[in-house]
Length: 213
Image (cartoon, rainbow, N blue to C red; front, side):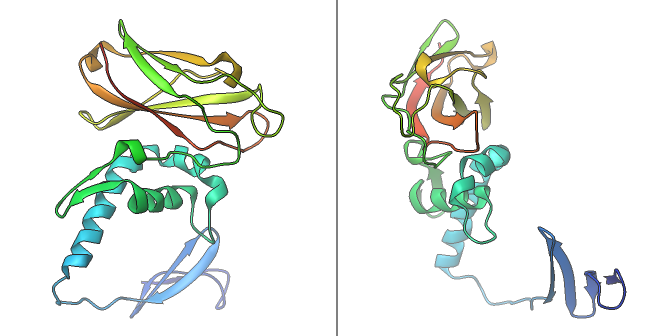
């Protein structure tokens, strides 16, 4: 049953007859209930659904991070997360239906105007991951107080790990201790910079796959 708020011309929320009322980002909507179709889905529709499911499974756990990382790329009412999903669908899905997978080397977790990491690389030693990059600065978009954000993905456990907080661009290196439970697993490492003064970010760089030893 539908609910009217603030009088007869107020917000309509819920179901009433063949209509559904809802709100999103303080905008009220009312739409008709879609008709259920018994028509079989086409191969193209099935492929798109499978690609979308693959992207969502991968990106869903870091939705909040992506809302920040792609904040400057939003279009209309789309969120940063929406734009990250779109980028992944367009650029980082590999395979053929029904066996789609993520091409980790083509994934981006942030897109922005700060200078992107140059020479990003990762090595593993004694249970630690060491991520390195060029510490060079420039007066236009590469500043000494840009903070490094490292994201580590373990596909075996379908889990993301975070780097160390507070490491700045000029330091050129971050050492991340990895729990013993992940020893022997191959992980994928991403790096981008985030301004400590405003909401600006850089494009993310893929530091590479590495086996934790």
